Length: 160
Image 1: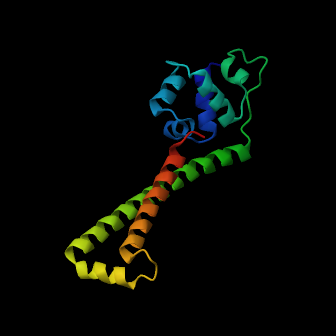
Image 2 (image 1 turned 30 degrees about the horizontal axis):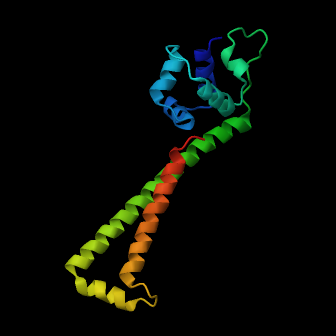
Image 3 (image 1 turned 60 degrees about the vertical axis):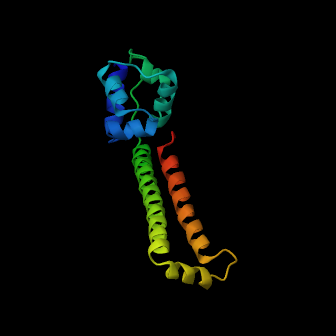
């Protein structure tokens, strides 16, 4: 069996789309499509990532003669783990986007309030019990939300 067929079957056994597998491997969906159609072959470091991801040997992936290598059996726990891992990446990305957008919206609202109603901004500043005025605290909270969101986004898109 050819590498292209093995990749296709492994992906289908784990119920992953080409897009989901591409995300897990840090490649494009088009790359997965080319590999599965036999138009291209993954680079060696990508082959290693594929073998680790699907828990199969490089021999299984690369050898076309299947007489010495038996086809791997999909372990239900491994399939469940792969599906949960795909969902965790999506959740992190969504949380990161929400945190970034929330922080940016808060900064915009704070800026508008400071411009349109300076008396409200002064009240926030005077009501603070910390040496940083109320506006500074609000600014720090907004920036922290943006930074946390960016970190979550970066972690969700990095190679695993």
